[in-house]
Image 1 (cartoon, rainbow, N blue to C red):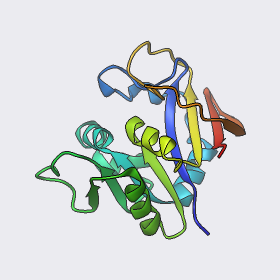
Image 2: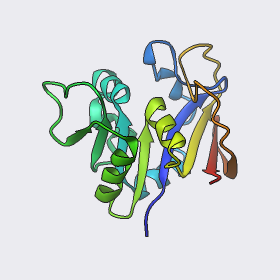
Image 3: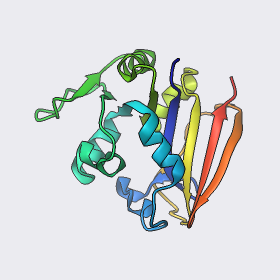
Image 4: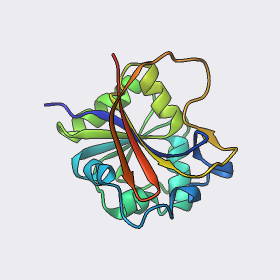
Amino acid sequence: MTGVVRWHITMSLDGFITGPDESMDFASGHANRMPASAREVIRTTGALLGGRNWYDVAMERYDGLDGVYGGDWRGPVFVMTNRPVPEHADPSITFLSGAIVDGVAAARKAAGGRDIVVFGANTARQCLEAGLLDEILIHLAPVLLGDGVRLVSGPALGIALERIEVAETEQLTDLRFRIVK
């Protein structure tokens, strides 16, 4: 069985997945425990596929791979980039250039039938446009940021979603959608 390709993010009520200057500080402090859906993602994920901007911000500000799910997840990580590999890059990370379909295929192979989590707005949009994304899981935070990186920006996509889960974890609202194909 092949796992799902899931975009897993925290978003502000006004639709931003990072605040100004790529800050993710808004995402914490709304719950004293991890949402059940996030624990499920950690348990079922076999590989991560992120974009270069996600990688740069994660390495610079959020403890790199140790910051992924608070250090509770380990496994293959792939980063899509058109830039040179950083000089002191973590050797456990595979940097890929080229088509998003090839990145998803590499992550899928490494995941061994488990799920793939996508990180980064641009990478997720590429997956959406290519028809490669199966789910979007959003932890909606009760905050209005007014600026930052939007969940989706750019030309209209016209992609239908089916809500498959709504849950609450203290002040967070968890929303899971299946991409209608």
